Length: 79
Image (tube, rainbow, N blue to C red; front, top):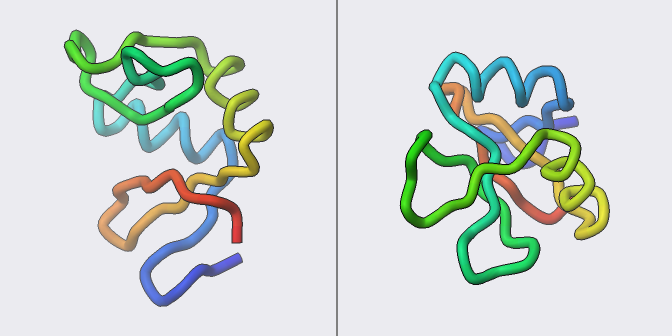
């Protein structure tokens, strides 16, 4: 499923692969209960979480992860 010209919805395995390639971790933004983002290991703004928790939050908040042509990921409300 494509969203716009440059974004394509990706599945959990693709998300993990891209994160690993870019040395990113799944994280919860400090000071929030369920604000998620990808971060660099050791980020002071994010507490690392496991993939199951990350994907549970995505499902609960009706979010999806989209990839750009350049391979970057963006978390957005599911279109």
